Image (cartoon, rainbow, N blue to C red; front, side):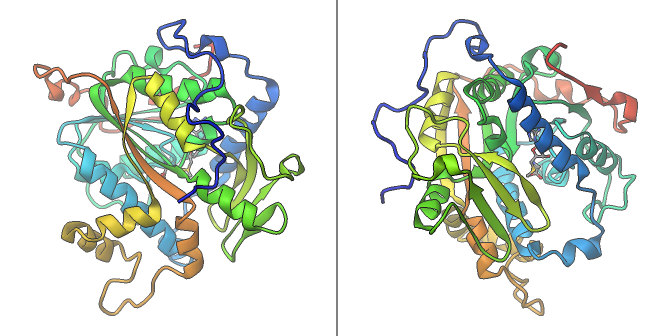
Length: 373
Ligand SMILES: C[S@@+](CC[C@H](N)C(=O)[O-])C[C@H]1O[C@@H](n2cnc3c(N)ncnc32)[C@H](O)[C@@H]1O
């Protein structure tokens, strides 16, 4: 099937130099201007302002089944790729909505980073079990560290030198915020690469550019959507054509009822894949969410998890299920898995980090970083 994004040449990839000039390989692209920073701040402020919902508010959400489906997708990824005792890096961890998923995987140590102060604070209280979170049952079993900062701008290898290497890195529904400039996209991948151990895994979910561009081209104007979302491109994209020579900074406005309302950027997956390869991250798989659901729902353990989460009803009394409009939103996303090149060190003791960090995180324990640190 011809996908929506124009891939004019087969040797696509980052348009500029492929040379590695410094170990982390991004310094030649650091021309971030004020407007890029402003947009990153806009994204941060948007997420910071979203307060935690009560159980009643959450269940009343028009996209409750989509939220449950996305939680199922993330749970499946974590169950497939996380192992007991793993050291985890959660980039753009948000309010810590995945903490319980990591706990179920019995990971040994967790570092979460997010640009939104409000989300990091919610994540902290969720980790501590202070907040009245509907998800929180037992105490989490792994020590953790939380950091507030822009993980697509800051060199995290310096900040996290005592925590690295990580066995697994996760970036859920956030990688596209790095695609505003080539420098940020490179920083994101350089950070993941520098922090993962050889053989380590990078799991994630992000918008599927092929689907978004296809929908844009099918739309009459520059906007499309349904009862729960809309996407709007600026007039500069009126011809609906995108040069393969400039695959960064293709901005659109995304609105998802009760969830998102901010600028996002197209991530042409073939460019993501070839840029990741430059940073020694090889593609294991990429699947649109629809294909992901079709495939993993066939596995009894994940079908059972889907019933328990209730995204498609519970198979008994609960007849409520994902609406067609929510299912269409799911189609806007894909899941990916990358693997850091190299052989794992067989002698490395995983549990050495398990006693790092407090089991309660105070406000003062949260580290705030910026590019000058
Ligand atoms: C859709 S939310 C996903 C949160 C979480 N990963 C999840 O799946 O529940 C996107 C998150 O990306 C974070 N984010 C966006 N840009 C970021 C950046 N430059 N550095 C760190 N976090 C960022 C936002 O603050 C927000 O928490």
